[in-house]
Each structure stands twice: as C-alpha cells, then as structure tokens.
Amino acid sequence: MNIALKSNTLKGNCSLPDFRLTDNLSAEHVQFFNEFGFIRFKNFVSRSTVALFIKEAESVERKWLSEGVDKINGVPLKLGENERGEKMISRFAFLSQHSDVLHQFLQDPRLASLTKLLYPYEARIAEDEKDGLVLNHYLQTPKSGFTKMGWHTDSPRDIFYGQKIMPMLNVGLHLDDCPFDNGGLRVLPGTHKQGVLKLLFGKKYFIDNTADPNEAGFDIEAGDLTVHHGSIWHRVQMSNRSGAESRRRVMYIPVVTGKYKPKDAQSKTPLYHKVLRKRFLSKFS
Image (tube, rainbow, N blue to C red; front, side):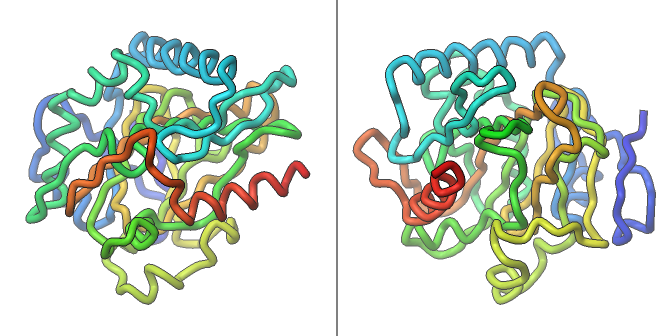
C-alpha cells in the first residue's frame, strides 16, 4: 500500500514509494535519499518484534524509575506522566546499553548498510556516542514530557560537543501506528543541501512549530523505519488526540562520522541538554 506524502516539493500530493530494505541499499534508495534528504522503509521489523522492543523499554523504564535515575552518561532523561497519572520516562538515552535485545538489534546488518548514505565519509552506528539509542515517547496528557518538538536540525549538536559539524543520520524505528492526521514527523525535503547560515538560522530552533507549506509527512505503521540526514529541517507535529490514542514511540539510532567520542557514566551534561532541560522543567514549575 502506498503511503501518502504531503509535500509541494515532491510534485504535490504524490505517493512516497514503498521502499523495503531486505539486505543492502539499492541505487534507487541512495538516489532518493540524496535528492530529498530522507527515506522510509516499510515493515523494517515485524509487529511481534515491535512488541518485544516495547516490553524491553518498559522493563528498563520500571528499573530506572524505581532507582530514581535521572540521567544516563550525562544525558538527562525527560520525565512526565502517562494517561493514568503515573510517572513515565518521555525520553530515554543509551537504551541499548541496558537491554541485550536492543543491543543485538543494533547489530542488524541492514542498519550497518545505511552508513553508505553518508559516502564518501566513513560512518558508524553510535551506540555509545552522542545520546546513544534514544526512545522518544510522545503522549498528549496535561503533564506528559513530550507532546511535540519544534523545527530543528541535528547537526549543530556537534558544536556543543566541541567539534565541527559532521554529516550524520538519524534513524527512527517507529513502534506505534501514526497516521498523518495524528501528528508525527514532518521534514522539509532537500534542506540537507542548505548552506551553514540556513542550517543555523533558517528557523527558530525548537521554538517554532509552525507548519511549513513545503513540509512532508507520512502515514506511519509500527515497524517502519525512517532515515533523515542530520542537516535536514524537521519537527514533530502534536497529536490532535489525547491520552493513549495520541501515543507515539520512536527509537532513534544515530549514525555518525568523524572522531570517535564515546560517553560513559562520568561524562558531563552537554550545554544544549542543560538549556533544553531548564525549559522543560519550567513548564511544570
């Protein structure tokens, strides 16, 4: 089934090809990604595998909440309340370091093949770099930790890590069905080719969540994999539903280039996380 892609930059309301990744990237995959800066692979994992991953994340969540963990390797966790008023983790970091199942998932050769999208740079899956395997849990409740995310690119994070901006990918495995009209990922196709000034100042980072006439969005099914270039502008549209019906969970795998910079329990919190954490906490103060 074709999934609708809403984007004027892709010749109006056209259909996004139903790409599949069963082994290695094809020339068609690379061509599409190079042109638009993103690609989606349908049914990358089965629904039973999705259920297993959710179970693993919930197990880690219970452990961290019971132990009062508030950061992993210097990266703060985002906390909130679920639809039942119970404490929840809205943003996990380095999740695969605490789950053998998720660690094994990151060894999938299909994921390794995605590094070719950054050719001629040598790229790697950053399990112990940046924020590691992240799980974002979007939920529309009065005190949820995540309901939306404003326009941003991922590349400038390198500046806060004291290094020059390097090409990277953000690879998202979607754990819930999320039709276009229920919010979710929005991208500006082709903006990965923009210059540094537009990369840094094209929009107000994380503050602006206004719909752009050229943005693209998708009907997502659990098990789909989306890949976007670190320099592409993207945001997360808030759900128009509430409670459990608004739930959207995505695991993000960073694929990076440049100098290897692992993080551990002694790592300091990057400045940009301190700023975002301050803004988040002020929401509930």
